[in-house]
Structures are given as structure tokens and as C-alpha cells.
Image (cartoon, rainbow over all chains, first blue to last red; front, top):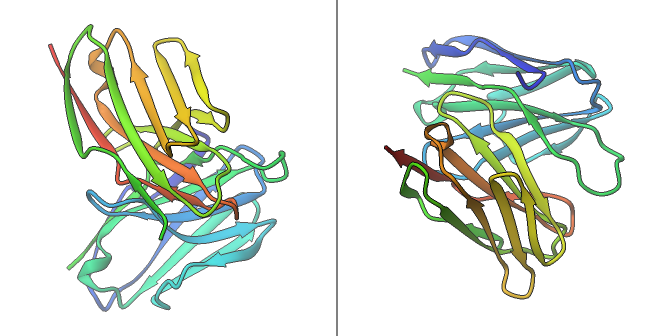
Length: 115
Length: 109
């Protein structure tokens, strides 16, 4: 148990569906992240929220829309996805302001399949 | 460009020692991380090195050579539960993490 919980664990959706991924951290951290993990590829950072403000958006297509209503919750809203978006989506949190580096605490991810 | 290289897959025997190498090229450097990820589970933090040398934590050790852009993770007395993917990540001058694709370690009895 890492203190970061993601739901659902698995999701199958059609290209015309709208769905949301949820992440909750119980660690009191002030930063949250969305990563995409595809097989045999490096983790891709998608979005970063620090103190509930979005500070990073790495050229992610607009069909992915993040939301951070408070420091403990993070959502990723999905709509009109493509089959190449099928991947494991990982949420992570960290405590910023600790002197330059902070380790990430990851959730177990949502395995997304787009048909 | 920024890049991390690590082997895709390695196989080792229970009770033995294995070394997983990682080379990096980044714009500036603020440290090197190793994470462990069991299949279907969250990646978990193993180690952080920013100074040259070896850091030991029980059966796991991590080494860094900044001049060579090189790190390795050393696992001793391998156990079946060490079967996992090991992710190497370097932090650049902007404190951004550059990730490798991971090394899948298979432990055989």
C-alpha cells in the first residue's frame, strides 16, 4: 500500500465514450502527477499539479483533461480516445519544497483499453 | 537530446547477484533514481544517488559515476520476489525526471 489509490484498476472504452480516472492520495502531499506507461517505453509525464495549480502540461492531446479539486484528489477525464491511447495510466504524488528532490509515490494504475 | 538506456530484460538465478546498468544523458544533473515495479503494481522508490559512489541498503545497492553518466543497481542474494521491472530515472537541471524504459528482471529457481 503506497498511500495512493487509483480507480478503476481496469477500463475498456470505445472511441466515442467519456470516462474518468480517479486518484486519491492519503499522504498529505502537495503535488500530484499523471503518467502514461506503455509497454517497453519510458514513463511519459502528462500533467503536474502543485498546490492544486496545473504547472505542467506536456503537449498532451486535448482529449485528456485533468482536474484537481483539492490536494488529495486528481482526475483524468477522457473523451473520444484513440486506440493508441491504450496504456497504463499512473497517478503519483510527492511533497515539494523538501530541498530539491522528492521521491514519487505511485498508485497501481488504471489499465486502459480503447477499442 | 536527453536519454536513458537500460537493458530490456535480464535473467538471474535465485541466491545469485545481478547488476542492472543504466546510462544517462541529460541537460544538467540533479540525481539518479531507481524504482521497482512488480507486474500490475505501483512503482516503488528504491534509491537516490546524487554523489559519486555506492549506497547500500540491505540486499540492494546503487552506484553512480557522474563523469561517466552511469549508474547501476546491484541486487544480492536474489529472491523470487525480486522478479520485477526496475526503472532508472535521471533528474535534469530543471528537476524534470527523464525515465528509462525499465529492465524486466526474471529470477529462476
